[in-house]
Image (tube, rainbow, N blue to C red; front, side, top):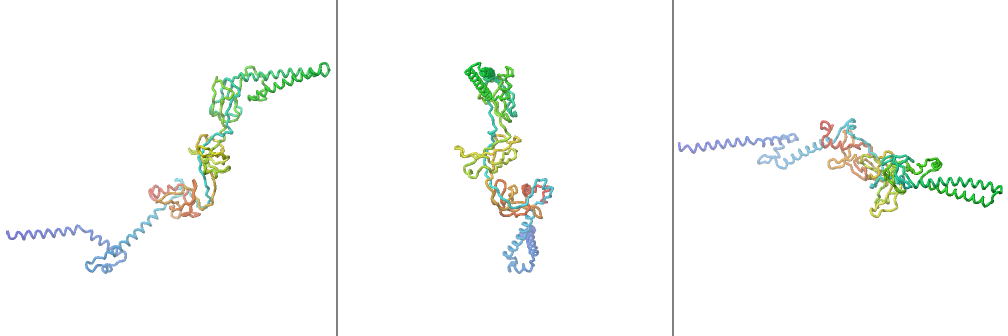
Length: 442
């Protein structure tokens, strides 16, 4: 038994080795599968097993490496072509008319047009200085009544406030006294004239009466002109002798024209001087826009040029023309003023607003012009969505000259083609993220 033990151990080792080989062969079936896949691929490409056998190495029967690599390259090229075709099909967005309207997408037809050139300049809306009044009382006095305040709109000649003025009372009294002296002088002159004609009195007495009448008339005219300087009208002066004595001290401050009170500098009981600016009234039916013109742009700015005033803050843009360009350049800012006069019927143009003025300085004939809202960036290219039989497709375009809102197309868009002029970002989102409906392009 001891002599047979090594033989038994040897038999067990052989069996174990055989089992290990079998298990290893079963654990590597992938090699055979790949070989079958390669044979099947070659068979589909029209290669027979006979050709493979001819190309096989005479010693081990395996295909040569060069032939195998070439066959794989052919397969990859075919797969790449299919992927490109699928990608091209995916770059189409199909939308109905209802969807176009729902998403606010606007279409336009490409055509040739001219491209306006603009200069953008900063500016500010200010009060029309020709329609601004600083109201002064013209006489000193104490405020007896205040009828209007800041923000009120007034009509021309409307009463603003009433002052009690001793200065006014003195002027009215002098005028009334002059009227009485003139009346007496006139009566004396008429009497002397009758007596002189009857040769009852001397000619010297007649001339003295005539001179006295002239002097009283001069005094009356002087007193009347003083009251006119205080703003009293002829009709008021005619009725002045019938006014009660208490009214002689009252001075009425009235609006010089229709407008809005933007400042008030008097209160009830306050004493004001004759040169005090008690009210400031502005007619805001028109405003000025003062545009700051840089030195480099002065040569291109002239009176009569069209201007678009952009205010922002939800206020629509306003069009106007340059009415005046200052001949002087400010030493500190190195800019000159250009002025635009704008109507302001709705009071949207408030003095103090900062604005941007787009001044049209020229127009050049160009090719196809489209709005900048039609441009989108897709796959790192500037594209325009053009409508075709398949749908809307992004087409790369080459850009030329441009201004603030429009651009020239040198290539990629032809005249007569329909393109998306507004809302193109929605189509870009459809291609990039499948944003519509069920996530498909159509």
